[in-house]
Image (cartoon, rainbow, N blue to C red; front, top):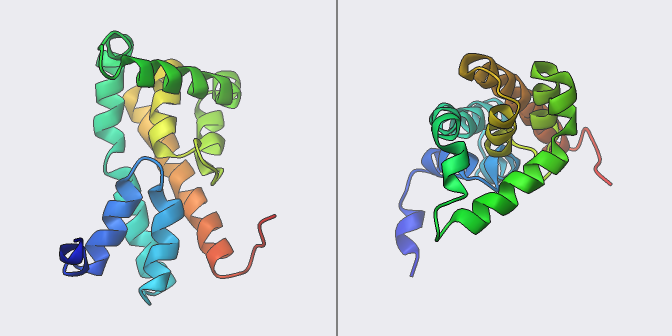
Length: 156
């Protein structure tokens, strides 16, 4: 049924996985390593993929943030997601730019680039500043995940 996926270039699969909202580079780095890619190549591809949706999301959320909750078929999801981000992003609310870097850098579910864009919008960070903080956070998260995948860190 999904044979066509196997015909795609493995590099594309790593970039695509990193761009997905839940997996992001936390899923892309182990995937790329399982393909036999060097850690440097995997890190670069995952960073690229994870950052691809960030700027469009920052612009999109900035202009449509409150309108999304009113859209009937997806409004409940966005309301739930926004409340969840608000509860989880106390560090961003308190420390702004630096808090957003830390928030995105923590390689746990609901703390990546996608959620960071919502947190940046909620905290009313300028797009350029929000993008830079998310870039630095994603870069740090990539280092942490890379070290974990290579066994330098052990996760409990």
